[in-house]
Image 1 (cartoon, rainbow, N blue to C red):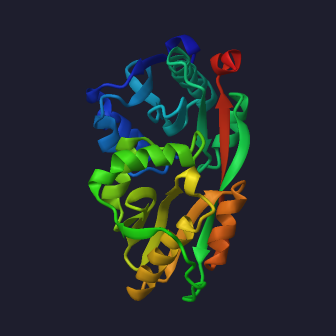
Image 2 (image 1 turned 135 degrees about the vertical axis):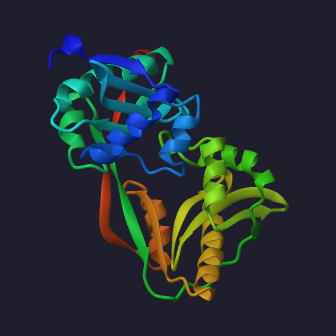
Length: 291
């Protein structure tokens, strides 16, 4: 297939069914871990998605998350079977990267969930940066509850604007999430609490339930209150609640480079279960010039 026959166009509503069909039938796909389903995400007019066509046939697609602090995640990617993935991917990426450059984005990250991604993304100048590791809670014993000035209460929807601010202070790009994504996570999670000191919210946790298992999706503490037992209190209260409900299969993800986070979880009985996913990133040229 000559490159001249390939046309790259932005996603429009009439492309929804062909895109979903290609996603379901192709092995050359990638879907980022997210709270929102692909159909719901595509319905958002702000979704950054481009499609590759040849003779009106959809051959591939690429989608990027909303920019948060100048960083985006590769949200979805797919190439049709028996096609030329390298050619299609390069042209899709060229259009997506140009849009990010126009928006003055700092970079793009990709969680390598599919085995076919690394070889192609190395050619696009992505580089390995970290690993997302999964920890699993073992047993039903917890360490003694430490004294803390903080108190724990249920998370209310009115807390979300403040929590979005705490989240951006607690995490560095590209790990920050914006308010809309926080709202989606809150709606999807069964156990959500905040930590307060003298009435002020200083941290929060979101935990999802899957039948008899649970996954700690988010734990964040304002930097000014880190190291004061706030995260330990949130985690102790959550695990105590889950164990009382008979839920002992509890997982959490964290970065391999986040040793402080891992020490906290290990103290509570979490162990690495052997699953890890590489995180690759590309810093955009415009960001390098500005630095």
